[in-house]
Length: 240
Image 1: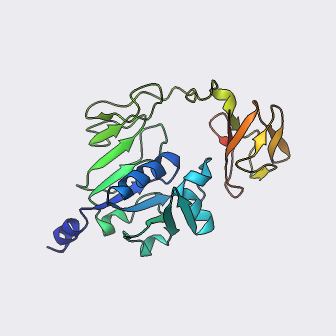
Image 2: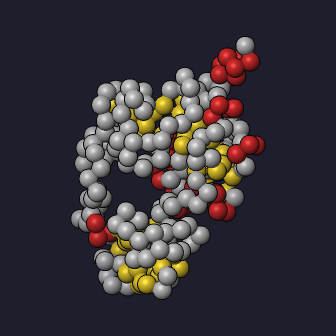
């Protein structure tokens, strides 16, 4: 009876696995719809647009996103708050069984088949590529800009990862800056700065990260995050 009583009490409670930009957008919308939210992250999140991501609370203890307060708690103490959202470090979702939310949103955006979460009979809603309805989630939400962005899929999968970012301000790949080496980002500019094409934005292990276009610096990965060399590792975001 205890388990079922808790599930009834938690009907308005949602667990979001991930606290990056898209996960934070989901949390924003659900919070304003009256849901109580917990977001779970890794120990060193790699969100780039940190000013609009609750993942920042992992580093600073709190984060404010569009007027909503996010507060960090140790995973064993986290619960569904009423007047803010909660953020914890729990990459495997171990606290899901304890909290028994009404649903889980898988917003890890790994763009590959996700590792299973301990949800038992709790429904999962997945975001983005490689999550399949009926196998990994009950529903999948399309996240591709040029496809049916925001569409709720009841079968199949979202558009596969193309490897190229969506078109924004007339630019795709050039607006994303990649880490040239393994290590931690040492920023030379701040989010919100205007930068010129060829300007140094940061360094990683002594190697420079230069803007490929002139525009507004909209994101920088946190200096404590560990970066690795490779095309998949974004370190900053500039847009016109």
